[in-house]
Length: 112
Image (cartoon, rainbow, N blue to C red; front, top):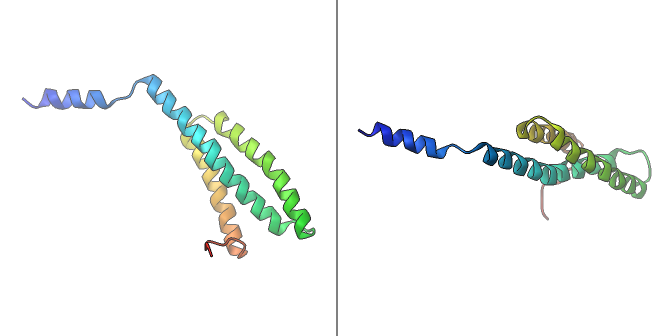
């Protein structure tokens, strides 16, 4: 007796193709905005401490290059086949760069 109600409940939980497309675009947008910013910031930090020039020049150069990194990240997010691939393509390099910065003692996790 309860089987048809269960089938109807499962059928109601499915999203339409249009809703799935919108969720994919929303996920990519968040990945581009947030993930691209995090990746650009980490690249800026890494370049700031590793470029062989005066500290002020290294920071300025890294900051200018961060605009190109962010732009490329945004374009790449929308060029990939899936939102999952877009997220992984941003999070994996960000984790690697964060690990490199942590090993260099250049990444400070404290707020003090």
